[in-house]
Image (cartoon, rainbow, N blue to C red; front, side, top):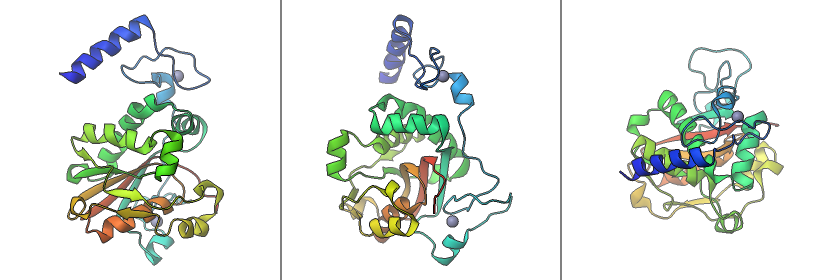
Length: 249
Ligand SMILES: [Zn+2]
Ligand SMILES: [Zn+2]
């Protein structure tokens, strides 16, 4: 009922004040109800679809592979999660939209990103088995500065779409680490050691968890966040991210 009223209000608002597409170079009115990316821009988004990828961490492989492939890193030291799927390549328009969402308060994009994430999760992960959607938490200092956790906004909408719960209280970030984007691969892993903790293990034990983050590069944040979830007895940990950036190291 609440959703029907919201849709009707959105429809009226669109007639009075049409939404302009969130893509900077596009000035078209958005033709998709409740969304902020127009259908033209939506169809040209850089979807993350490499010729092949590691079945665990999702790292792209140069050659085209059609079989289930596990990369060298995951073979040598498997992470605590089982699978990762990413929706977009972090480049061009996708990078622009994610940055606006994350750093420029364009929080209305949460619905657009959740819609995209739902498609990837249903196609690539065992979405029926997910019990709970857990966003990668920000440290309280970072969250206070930003005013919101962008991953939690998407996780909330994604959980609703999958008809599952969202849990943003059990996993917390206990160390305020330097920005990951300034560091290389091995430094990223060191930087994140012990950065996350589970404070409500009873809510994690035996659950199949979908861990959601905005952008991944090497997967080190997901691996670090998955560690305490696994230690607390999570039955499965799958990961989804809105975008995947090319690794620089
Ligand atoms: Zn557009
Ligand atoms: Zn891998």
